[in-house]
Every structure is written in C-alpha cells, then in structure tokens.
Image 1 (spheres, rainbow, N blue to C red):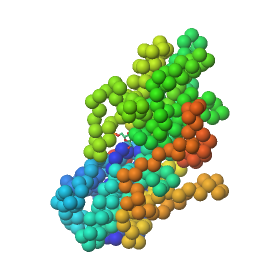
Image 2: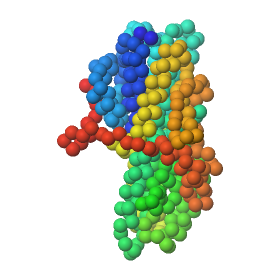
Image 3: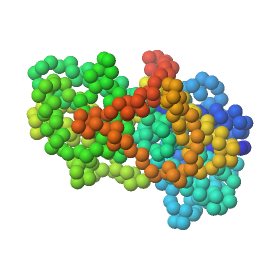
Image 4: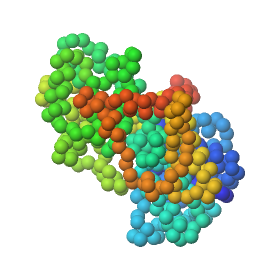
Length: 408
Ligand code: F6P
C-alpha cells in the first residue's frame, strides 16, 4: 500500500482516537508512505478536507497524547451515502479524490451507520473494478454492533458510568431520614441497553448499587414505574435508578417524547434522545410528592478519557492495527471484530468479518441476562462486562489539567 486514509464517524468515544493511533502505527510499520486523515469523516473527505497524520504523530509524545484525547481527533460526521443507483456522482467524486492522493486503502472507524459507508464503498469498488480496499474499524459506546464480542468505546463508557454512579449513590445517601430522595440517571445507548446495564457494575464491596435499571429491551410501564418507586420509598431514604435514553412506553413512544414532541432526527432517521430522566423525575415528583433529581450523563459518558479503561484503549488500538494488516493482505469489505477468550483470565484477539452481515444491524442485550422482576442485571452480564473496564491509563497533566492533542 502506498498511501492510506482513515476517518472517524458517528458519536465519538473515549478511545476512538486509539484506533487512529493503531492505524497509523501499523501503517508505518508496513512502510506506508502517507497516512492521511479525513477531517469530519466522509463528508469532509468529499470537500477534500484531508490532513497528513505525519504532521501530528511523528513523535512518541504525541502518539501517547492522542490515546489520551477525547472526542474524534479528526472530527466526525453523521453522513449517509446515497444509494449507488440514486447518485453515482458522489461515488465518482470519492474515487477521484482517492486516485488523486494515490490512496490504496480507506479505514472508517464507526458504528452501525458508518459500516454502511464501508459496505457501499467496497461494493462500488468491486462493481467498477477499482483497486482500493475498504475496512471498517468498530467503535460505539452503544456496544450494538453484531458479530464482534464487544465494541471499542463501550468499556470506557461503562467504567465512567459505574464510577460516577458509585459517587452519585454516596451523594444521594448523604441526607438523612426526613424524606426519601429519588435520583434518576439517564444513560445513552439509543435502542440497545448495553450501556444502561453497565449501571449494575457500580455495585461492589463499598457500594450498594442502583435500585433499578430500565433498558429499552424490556417493557416499560409508566404506572408500574411510579408504583415501584413509591414502594422503594417505603423502606429507603435514598433511591437511585438508571434508565436508558431509549425506554419506550407501551404505545411505542420514547419516554423523552412525553415532554418534547419536537425531537431532532439525524441523516439516518435516528431521533435525538434526551430528557427521559428529567421527564420521569418530573412525573414521580408530581404524582408522589417525593424529592427527585435527574442526571443526564449525555456526552460526559463518551468523552471521559480521564477514566478510560486500559483494556478498551488497547483493544481500540488493536482493531486499528488489524484493519491495516488485513487491508495490506488485500482484504476489503470487512469489519474487524473482537473475539474473547475466557479460558485463562480474559484475553481478546482481532479477526475480520464480512461487512454485509454487520452494517445496519443492531445487537441487543440477551433477554435472559435481565432480571425483570428485580430490575437488575444477572451475573452473566457482570461476567461479560467486568473484564472490559479493567485498567487505567493516567492522563498527562499540565497545570492541574489533562493535556490533549488537537488539530491545528
Ligand atoms: O451512537 C452513539 C450515541 O452516543 C448514542 O448512544 C446516542 O443516542 C447518540 O450517539 C447521540 O448522538 P448525538 O451526539 O448526535 O446527539
């Protein structure tokens, strides 16, 4: 491979930049001349918004900083490629730019929607005898890509959620016996509850854990929810509940739509889910008179690189490296997947899988991992998620604050 290009797409994660680092590292090992980065994903690429990563990563210090930098270093987008038959010009433009920069391989770090981009581009290349290869590099805090055991980005968000919940649970419990306080914590994850389930990880020897977890995979009934909070309030003065942003009422409406009918929709038709926790806190306060508080973790849970999981950072780097290695072997139209080996402690390895079986498919939590009655996650989930939050990589501090690598 002479030159290659890497892009980031969709919602960022705490470790999405470690995959860029992995792509760069392996490419340089293989003697690739130029490693380009597309600024703002494929949308920026179409405007030839391209940088040379040698300008940033040519020393070990910056490489280490990149791994400690939150958000998408290259910039991201939520851009849906048109169907080939509807707009061939877009594809012609992409291949014109690839040829101009003598790019042999394109790597796209993203989730379900971004894998659709890799599918479309690799299909177009095959149909039109183009030489370039296309590889997907998985990332999403939602952990909902199929085939792969888990997705880079998930472990770090899960670690942030469990850590901050331990702190929230302590805080909520600090006020005495006068009147119970109900704290409702809203967690991202759209249609899959993997991330909200991570609330279960807060429970340990020094923390009693959350009182209930509500996932999009389970039925949600508003009256039952209020009744169960009232029931808890009979015996507890501190109640902390985790809810997924994607919980829906029985008529199929997202809970956040109960208080906001004008929800924005992105290019892939996804509604911007926000406000479910506050909506529920208001309903509980109105119907029960209990003191309530809502916390929406929002972008904090995907930007918290300061408490990222080292396992996650290493795996994000590993999948970036694997993508380049396999592209160099001539593979195309694939996504890197992670395989777990639990036989002797936790280890993982990377492999590749046909993108057609992955793009646009969402993997949900197995229903048998949910204890519907007690509204908690079963041991199977804890066993699955615990290894993914292990280890830390200390930030590099300057003047009391973590230093990040930013584009000029
Ligand atoms: O896809 C990742 C994700 O963080 C989801 O969990 C969340 O629903 C969505 O992105 C939020 O998107 P945006 O940042 O565009 O509002």
